[in-house]
Length: 54
Picture (spheres, rainbow, N blue to C red):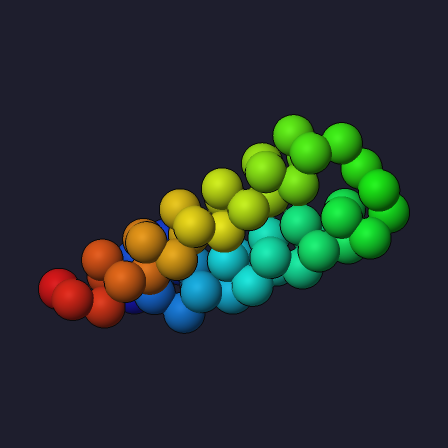
């Protein structure tokens, strides 16, 4: 199975984006940067769930 068809890949990417959002918040970055990372995390989580259901 390729990386982009593997739910665990997207789960790992979601965790990475959650970490990045948290770090951005701790640094006091602009809200838009925090939101971008949070949005990517949600998208990766959704993709992982989609792959797990098929």
